[in-house]
Structure formats: C-alpha cells, structure tokens
Length: 338
Image (cartoon, rainbow, N blue to C red; front, side):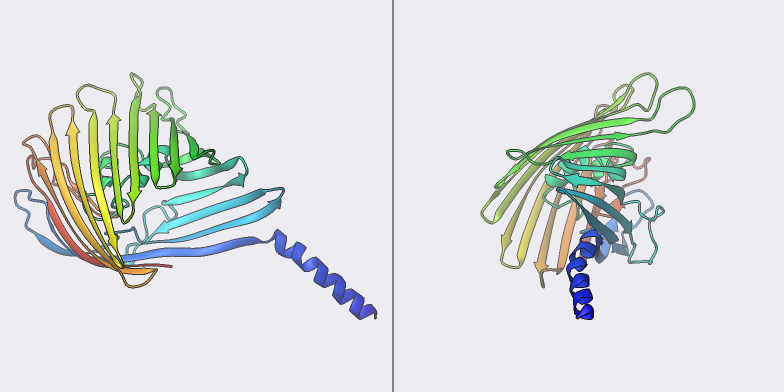
C-alpha cells in the first residue's frame, strides 16, 4: 500500500514538473536555386550561379517558452542564417534574430537583436514576402532603412481592436564624445480580417549635426484569391539631396497549388537618381512545406542611378561607377520549411 501511495503521489506531481519545463521548437527553411544574373555593368557578363535563399533566406532556428504562471511566459528565439550553396553560416552566428524576454496579456518585451518596427511594416506589405528578385529588401541596402537592431529593447503590445503598437530602442554603445549611434523607433499596425495598415518611424543619431530619419507606410487587402499590397519607404540621412524613397505596388493570385505574383517598384534619390523595376514570380506547392518557384526581375536606371534587385538573400546591384546599368535576374528554385 505504501508503494501505491508513493506512486500516486509521484503521478500527481508530474504535471507540476512538466509545467516548469521549457518547450523548445527546432525549425528552419532550406531554399536553393539556379539563377541567371546580369548586372549590365561594363566588362561584366551574364553569369549562372547557385544561390541560397531566392524566395526565403535559408535558416536554422530555436525558439521556446516557459509558462511562469498567471498568464506570463518566458520566451527566447535564436536564428542562424545558412548558405546552402556553400554550407557557410552568416558572419554573425545568430545574426538573424537572438532575443530573450517575457510575454503576457500586455504583449511581448524582448532584449537582444530584433527586427525593427519599420521592418515589420515593410514585411507585411511586400507581396513577394521579401523574397524573389524585385522585393522591397533593396530599400534596406546601402545603409538606407534599418531592418535589424542589435543591442535593443523591444516592445509589441497585445492587439486591441486590431491595433498593435511596436516600440524599440537600440543602444549605439559609443563611449566617445559625439553622436551616440542610438536608434529609437515606433510603429502602429492595424490587422483585422482581410485588411492591414501600418506606419513606422525611426530616428538614428549617426551624426552630430542632424539625425537620420526613416519612414514606412504600407497597406494590404485580401479579396478572395487575390492579395494586393503597397508601401512607401523612405530614408533621409543627414546631409543635402540624399533622401531615398521607394514605392511598391504588388498583387498575387492563388489558384489551388499555384500562386502568381507581380510587383512594380520605383526608387528615387533626391539628387536625381531614378530606377523603375518590374518583377514576376510563380510558385507551385508540392505540399504544405515544400514548393518550387521561378521568378524574373528587371531594373531600369536613369543616367544617375545604380539601383539593384534583391531577393531574400541575394543582391544584384551594379558597381557604383556603372551609372545607368540595367540589371536583370531569372531564377528557378525549391524551398522546404520544417
């Protein structure tokens, strides 16, 4: 009888032990493609390459939660980029995301390396999902808009009537006199039913004379099998005639396992550089986790511009001296998520 009583006591305590454990999930995306790229720069020929991440950046991640009781959870997420074409890791092992924090009825508070408030708006309003050549990721190149924040504290409120508030502070951690390098950012998102609206703002103390300012506005709507998304992205760095602006308008149509995409893009710099891109893509779902895809993108620059094309992990941009070059890219790939 004593053994039975001891066994019963152990059984009743098992849920308490399980309650205290951290639930960890291993996940990832593996994406590889054959691409034909032409920068159109003088002295450079079209080349065939094997790319990693033309639709989605290849990655390996770990995330977990621990229930602390009373609706409060401890959370963490670390995510590493992987180049499938070479097997190499990103220069920063967990440079994609590395955070720890708390989650509850108030929302979510994290510390570490996190996506910026503007990045959330840009991702939600890119019909390509920030993949394929011609995505809005080109707006985050060349020290324009800030996509990820190191040394940051981040807050995202719980949705209320469809609205969510995002706020972030990234410490520049400079010990010398002069500009701190600190970044402060906020965004407000509305997501309810088929509608999405978002707006974000960053202010970066990069120079002592004036702060850099970054803006993002975006909208999206799902109408049956159609998705329509548009955004405006701007980076105004300290100094004259260097404000960068990008506008995107895209649509997608889903028909069973088939999905068709198109996106139009305008890039401008206050100094007079202009570039217009158009891009198309097609994806076929072999299963819920695996798809094959193809995409094509083309950029037309004026005589002052060297804008390029970005997919999720690749960047095709002419060298700075190749003003007026018109890059094009075509790719065929396979993507698996787990």
